[in-house]
Length: 395
Image 1 (spheres, rainbow, N blue to C red):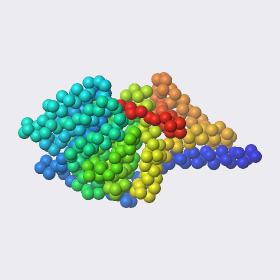
Image 2: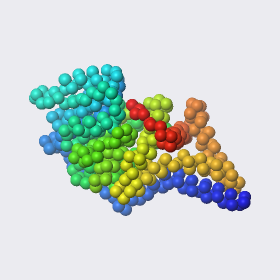
Image 3: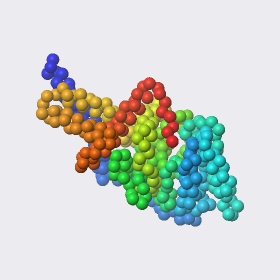
Image 4: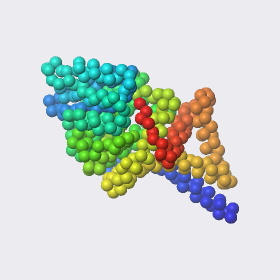
């Protein structure tokens, strides 16, 4: 009986280790190989001002009085012909000065030629959620291409032109830019969440190099307006920046990633806020399976990538727990060493969470903390899913 138990524990150990290894190493390695043997480069074309398509930047905001004026100035001063760029903003039940600021910009943003205002707004008195706001913004938008963005991040001046170069390839239905965590002056951070985000971006880059990305960067991506009418976002959709691009893939078009087009954001929004945001994002992955079961069917041309990129990581927290428990029951030196390594890793993460300085090991402790926090968020997301608790829209 004991021998059978030990054999089962070994199976559990190696299956859990394989799942963790595949999620973080195996899948990226497979993408790298695929990008070498079967590359699909995007046929980009320079966007001349005279032939530039009309673009509508769309955004849903709630209580963003601290940043909305700066964001509108950022959008209105992008390196793009003024007459071909307008902004559509939906205020989703804002209770601060956001509606007043938007009204000022809507009134004062007309072009000197007497053309219509460049900022159009929809001010909702009652919040209906971001998904409903995006559906309304898409209906109001008139551009041939829509630029999706959020209130907080700042887009680099030339980013829009760079994204639009991808649409010279008629197979491209959407193009995602790159979110940089840090400061444009000092550069991107390599710590904690910054390191995690850099790894995530590398995976998106490899997916794009030989196919389509399983989602877009919500702070900066463009999509063809003609591809967005068929399937409005379901009420309460959390991951609009995944479902909208996947609906474009469903129609036979590519979603690509262009690291040249960048937006900047703070790498540290506070631990509580960052944890809530991550729980919401991971809860959104579970929600997608309810809202769009076709994502797991043959209708999804990148089903393998979606499962490997988005869903396998939801199983990692359970694999980590199984790995730890199995290691405790296996007496052989290999498993004892694995147990010691796991305990040391978690100790480093706790030290980082507590703010304890441990010399050179701090460089390892910070990524360890991020890894543990992200997988803790995945556990909370699972609990939300099975209990039916809804994840709120975190600004």
